Amino acid sequence: MQLLHTKQELKKYLFPLISKSKTLGLVPTMGALHLGHVSLIQKAYHENEHVVVSIFVNPTQFNNADDLKKYPKTLDKDIALIKKVSPDIIIYAPSVEEIYENQVKAEKYNFEGLDVVMEGEFRAGHFDGVGTIVEELLTSIKPNRAYFGEKDFQQLQIIKKLVAIKNIPVKIIGCAIVREENGLAMSSRNERLSPKLRQRASFIYETLSTAKEKFGTKSALEVTNWVKGQFEKEEDFKLEYFQITDIDRLKPLKRKLKNKQYRAFIAVFADDVRLIDNIAL
Ligand code: PAF
Image 1 (cartoon, rainbow, N blue to C red):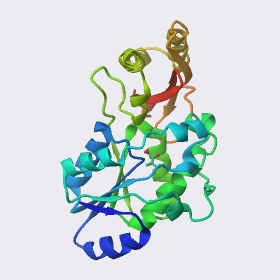
Image 2: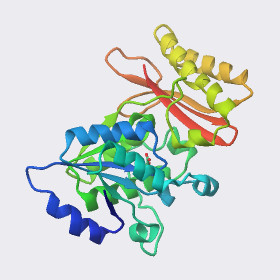
Image 3: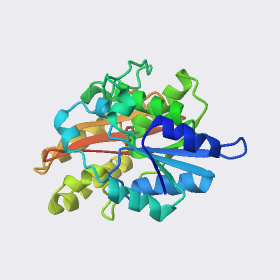
Image 4: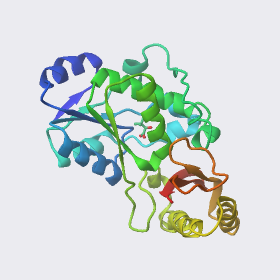
């Protein structure tokens, strides 16, 4: 198991391994790995000769200092989990200084409106932070393919846009959401829920699934009002947003069109833990 910490080590160890006939897959993570990450790592491992998993809690994408402070750091556990997929997988775990040097600051991007709705509306600057670290990882590791989960579907679309506007030669691969037994989307933040709340959080996916059903016959507004009504009756969960958009431009839906694909997105607070999820409609 190779554990690298610096760009210099990447150059020394990684680049000689990569030749034209061998592909490199990258799975960027912030650690606190769960089975959702494992499914990305397995997919990358099956599709490429070499795989790098990066582990870096990126400060510039946290709009809330407390959230950053509380973000779980479990490097030894993460390494053990990656090793189980394969000891050949290379781990890149740089420090904040290695990535940002003296200035912990995000670049500013024009994501053509993809970043102004939903997560962008409620987490100011978040996607500039994500863009900054993902651009840095893609340009320093130079993978052929990079893997991202659809739980962060808006992030996935923004990363595809980033790669297009910056002309980065990599294929961005979106991977299906992995759920806990009760339907709750896997997330590192689930660890912070009390056992009772974690069980009850099945409510989020149940609501999304019923919203999907209702979308077959009802308008986006009717479905949205129904979801809001469900959350008003709930003491344990506070709805931050529920939004139905098309999947390409992420524009809130006004009128359903036949040939367009839509998705419903949700953000919910369970105590002080913020959970997001989405479903294809
Ligand atoms: O999805 C995540 O875990 C992060 O946003 C990412 C893509 C690793 C960038 O820090």
